[in-house]
Image 1 (cartoon, protein in one colour):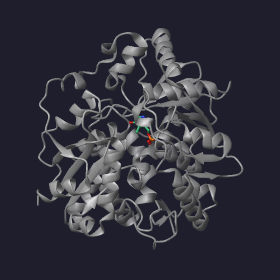
Image 2 (cartoon, protein in one colour; image 1 turned 180 degrees about the vertical axis):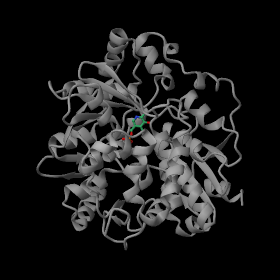
Image 3 (cartoon, protein in one colour; image 1 turned 30 degrees about the vertical axis):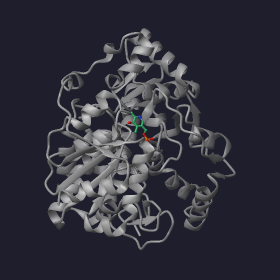
Image 4 (cartoon, protein in one colour; image 1 turned 120 degrees about the horizontal axis):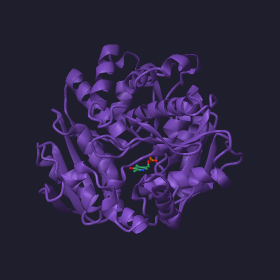
Length: 462
Ligand SMILES: *Cc1c(COP(=O)(O)O)cnc(C)c1O
């Protein structure tokens, strides 16, 4: 077994290769896919720190791909995925304060960090379809950011259609424009008459209809897809190297991560296990703090989801948490299965012991606004509300000698209401790409919130 063979966290499938893992999304036993082994990269660190972002991505990803594609194809796929970014460093790392840095992950087409993984995933899908034939119908539900990043990952790609469900009237005008202004014929925006939870429920029902799933070759783009995690491992190495370069600190650094589904920070956890120079990860949640409560008390218990200024983190049940449990349970899939079953039945589990690789905390709305104000006043830098939660929690866990880098997950121009609340003027953080969207026509279908109606809509295209 090696790092290009994938097993399920619940132990119920035979090992599969990279391309199968990517196309499968969720494992067929209900678990999540993980590489059977993680490579140890410590001997390569010194040569890796000299590489460009795309070169580093190639080196980090290579052991996980195996013989799924020739090396030159992987290399050109990566080049192509990051050529759409607007900054020549792809992920610039900037200094925000003494011992505090930001890794700006938002220079992709939709101005949120999800582009880093979804540009790559879109190209991967197209590559595998081209080689193995067939078509793919992606169905996803979104409360905002994922939908637009997924659409921009596959727009115009032959053999692929994408259907994105979002709650009609409940996503921000900018988010709706980023999805529904896209003119490509393979993009279908379904504004459901319901909530985001209705969208997720419909998605589950559709994917549980295995005949339908097979007949229409359904694919998923949510963060259970292994390729998304893989693409995100890269920038943890990158950010740690850049901070070491810019500070006089040669040891490992702290990384603070604004967290919702535990996808982004789980990639950081794998980077740490692979030997990236990371001292520990600082998990930052907003008022929806199931994850920070878990790392501080061992209790993993669902609460009510409440809307906050950082909507992409308004999540209580984190879909990638199971992947972490696998390592926390010493890779014993039987234990993971038992815990996940108990969680499904009782909405609650508790674990003994703690994990020194994580520190965790939450930042509420007033702290988020105060953090945005603080760095605007001090540095003229405007944080988006998600990144502000990360910075606010990072400050609580800063260590004197060890620098911390916080992941900046979105451009502030995407959240003008929060910026207006913090700074009194929402136009302070405008981005030209977003201004261009104003007044563009929307291509969307308003539709009843039930699975049959959505299935009929999908069928009508074939
Ligand atoms: C999705 C998202 C997050 C949360 O990422 P997870 O992988 O779900 O933890 C944070 N910030 C922004 C802007 C996002 O779009």
